[in-house]
Length: 269
Image 1: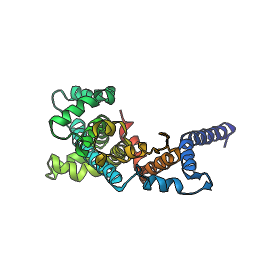
Image 2: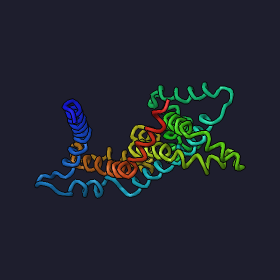
Image 3: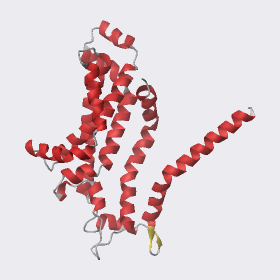
Image 4: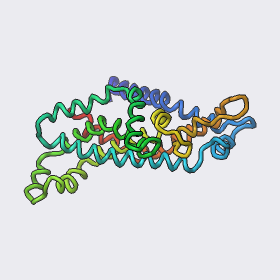
């Protein structure tokens, strides 16, 4: 191994380690702060998180899981069909429609939440988990359709043509041939949809009014003591760790497919 290649490898590892420390330090600090008590270290902060009057309750977690599940399912369904149409079919206005879909990314979603709140009231979904899920699905679609279109385009057309020769129609080809081939892209889209919906705060804050409908993020923010309006920061840090653990576990299990989805789909074109 030459001196230059050795120096390049060391530089790669040092840079990677520095970036890992930079990104992990806030989470590690939150974990340390969540365990720190007046008498040392323990789980007292987590006990207050789940037992205080304004702490996290089971229905908050169920609400977050419901919103996340609906968002993931809806995003995968629409993005798969949209990506398949954009990636495999030719129709008038296809490129313009795709650009309009991507243009949603340029609109700060906070600027239209009030309008969406009014719209949900018109259709009877105001202050509901289904209405919140529909809004989150809408904001996931530009990236998700982009990912799925590129994932479908990366699949060799010979596979699709062979299926059609065997008598498969478009739907059968999509289900039997294309979906297994774009599995990394599906996992990437689903993972992004879950992470966004699970940790989303601003949209639930605007769209949900009833405390029974609150998600875990709203419950964590409401962790305030009644004494002089002070904030229980230690319990808040415990809430941050509680919110982060499912995301970390899910990413750890799906990391390989997640990276493969980006390299085979999103980076194409």
